[in-house]
Length: 85
Image (cartoon, rainbow, N blue to C red; front, side):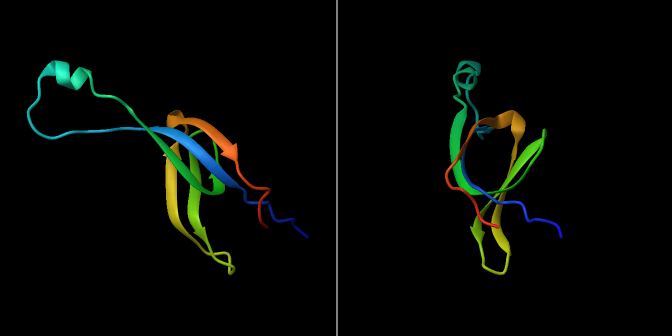
């Protein structure tokens, strides 16, 4: 019998890309700051390329509000809870 892996609730700090519209000077573009984001969700999967979290879990094991974040953008992953099966 295969044991189910625990799915943990995590807090992810990551850097998002950004874009803008309209005309601006080169100096304005160079001063654009990177956006640091924080997401909380159930850690469904993680590999070298990306982390996959979901914001909502149902008792029938369905998941919603999927968020895929490239690992190159992830700054920190902190476990918030022991997990569920």
